[in-house]
Amino acid sequence: MKLQGMAHNDQVDKTTQPITGFSRMSKEKKSSGFGKTLVVAVLCLGLGGGGAWYYNNSIAKSVESADAVALLAPTELKRATPQVQYEPIFLDIEPFTVTLRNDFDSRVLYTGMTLRVDDEDSRKRLVRYLPVIRSRILSELNSMNPTRLNDEEELARARERIKKVVSAPISPEPYPQYVSDVLFTSFVVQ
Image (cartoon, rainbow, N blue to C red; front, side, top):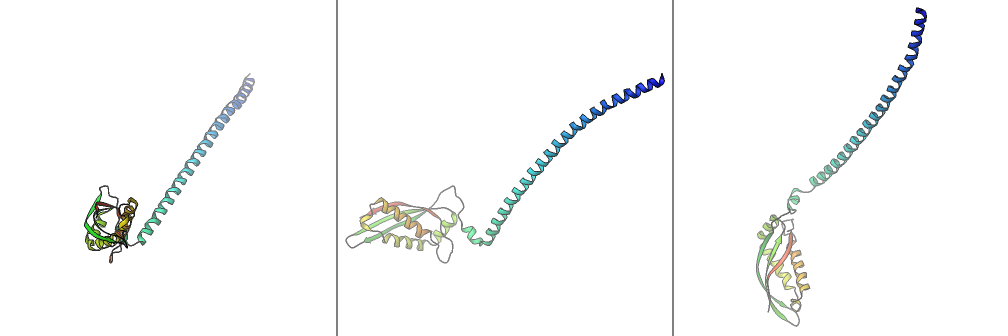
C-alpha cells in the first residue's frame, strides 16, 4: 500500500506540479508584461529628457552666439542705445524768432519747442551740444515756406524734419540722440 500511496503521492505531486508550474508561468507572464511597461516608460522618460537637453543646449548656443556678436560690437555703442525709461524726459529749447521769406511773402515766426528724449544719455548730449542743436533747428525752420505755416500737415513734416536733424550724431561723438517727439510749446506767425 505504501507503494500505491507513494505512487498516488507521485501522481498527486505530478498533478499538483503542473498546476503550480502553470501558476508560476502566469506570474512570469504578468511580470514580463509589467517589465515591458517599465521598459517602455523608461525609454519614454529617456527620450523626453534627451529632447529637453537638446532643446536647452540649442537655446544656450543661440544665446552664446548672440553674446559673441555683442562682444564684437564696441562697448561704447552698447552704452549709446537707449534704455527704456518709464518717466518721460523732456528738454526745453529756448524760443526762436525766424524771418521766413519766399518770392512773394515775408513773415516772422516765433516758436518755442520741447524735445522728448528716450534716455538720459541723449539728454546730456543735447545739453552739451545745445548751440549745435539750436543751429540745426534754426536752419530747418528757415527752410519752411511762410505761406504754408498754418497747414497742419506742414507742421507735422516740420516736426519730423527737426526730429531727424536733432537725432543725427554730433561730431566728434558717434552716438545719435534718441528723440521720440518734437513738441511746439508756442507758435506765432506774423
